Image (cartoon, rainbow, N blue to C red; front, top):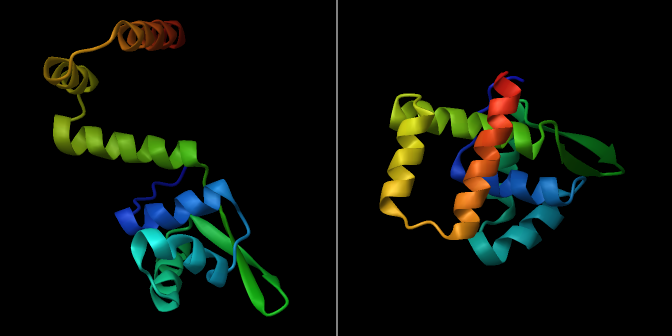
Length: 126
C-alpha cells in the first residue's frame, strides 16, 4: 500500500466516505457542518488535498462529483499506527503497550483481549 498521511481534518472527510461512499460536495458539507462548521470551500480544499495524496477519487454524475475512498480504513489506520509508533515510541510496540498498561488499569475483559491479540500475533509470526 502507498503510504498516505492524513491530517485530522482529512480523517474527518475520509471517515464520512468510508461510512458512505459516493457523496457529493454538498452532501459532505451538510454531514460535516454540525461537527466542524466547515463551509463548502473548506470541504473542496480538503477533497483536493486528499485526492492529490491518492486516497480518494470521484465519479461524475451529471454535474455533481461523487467522491469515494481509494484506500480502506484498515490500510489508513495501519499506516497511521506505524507512523505514530515510529514518532512516539521509536518503533517499539512493546514500549507503547507497556506505557499504556502502566497508565491505565485494565479490566479483565481488556486483559483477555490483549492476550487474544498477542496469541494471534504469535501464530502469524510462526
